[in-house]
Length: 172
Image (cartoon, rainbow, N blue to C red):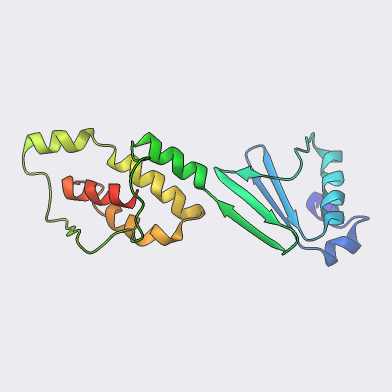
């Protein structure tokens, strides 16, 4: 009943004419719409019910930079800084970029597995799962182009070997 009263209000005319996206994450809110008038009315109504602080137009959220070209009506997301931080964290920031996320010269298989205790110990010290997790976050947000490659290296998360690690570094 309360939500119905919230929606049906003195703003019924903009409710029907405007499409507003309201995204909430913990205590952060992102509002998007073609109608700035609708956004302002929604913010006014919400601020009567909740304490809110308006931080202005969003420039970044969840390690993504938001770029707007109002003149041409374009909006795009970038995770360049996130990717640079990940590359630096895993000492891969000075490597040569590649065009193919996972070339065919990698012969990855689950048949490959650490055979000796020494090999298992070596692989356990490598941040294989951590790197793959960071790559998965990039996929979910902006880097769909590496999704197949990351899916392949993810299959070997349980028992990776040196060849799998080389493939993960290639994806980085």
